[in-house]
Image 1: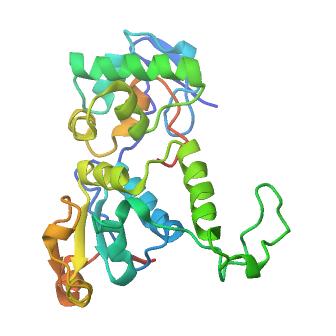
Image 2 (image 1 turned 180 degrees about the horizontal axis):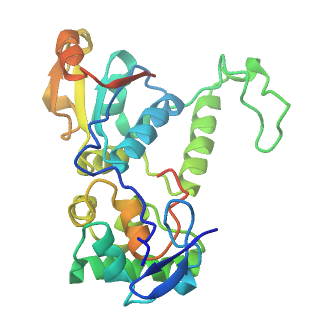
Amino acid sequence: MPTTTIAGHEVDVNDEGFLTKPEQWTEDLAPELAKLIGLTLTDAHWELIRFLRADYAVKGETATLRRASTQSGVPVKQLFALFPQKPAKKMAYVSGLPKPKGCV
Amino acid sequence: MSMPIVPSFGDGPDEGGRKLAIICSKGNLDMAYPGLILANAALGEGIETHLFFTFWGFDIINKATMADLKFSFVGNTAMHPPGRFGISMPQILGPVPGMTAMATKMMKKQIADLEVPEVPEFLELLSASGAQMWGCQMSADMMGLTMDDLYEGVDGIINASDFIEKSEGAQLLFI
């Protein structure tokens, strides 16, 4: 597995660039990851990032888009607005988590 | 310093433009889900997604039936008792009164256990994700249904030619 340097942090990533060790993620890395994919984080983004991190810590896998919406209470439309086009994958990336595995 | 490895999310200036059209022609519970699940996956990938509901597929968007789709294992030799792969449910049991209700209940439980929503909530999820949903004109005429009878996220009732126009350039799935 390759490593890459993001904002001075060396992190392990897969071939696509997703972090493979969620424990290497820190809150100061999120804005840098976001910037790399053209996003500027707001409080609304942070609410989801914190939800995703907490949910991963409990469930051991990344929440799907539906789970992120139903569990956090943020409507699906809002998720598409905050993380355009591919919300589930973008949320996961910024949160330093693997892509969601679930289908729905 | 080398550039970081960053995933491609397919939303660069020269990317995107992929389009998917799914024709849902069956109203059995087990035939409704594949179309809904694939539409949801496509929308989550930022793909323009159209669903065209025709014939029995109308039951998926008919408010009177959408929450009550059923599964029967008549004619489905792949149905086996839970966890008993290799043993087919005897086909003769399929038409026995109460068997469809039981099989439906079992399937709904398995689906719910995976946190996959029931059909009406699934339609809401698709609608919120930007799906374009269309009812088939001929099916509506045959069944005497209008937009008032259909799930509110349905965009319109259109004829076959309209669908062919809307799905121009799309990858097509018939279910």
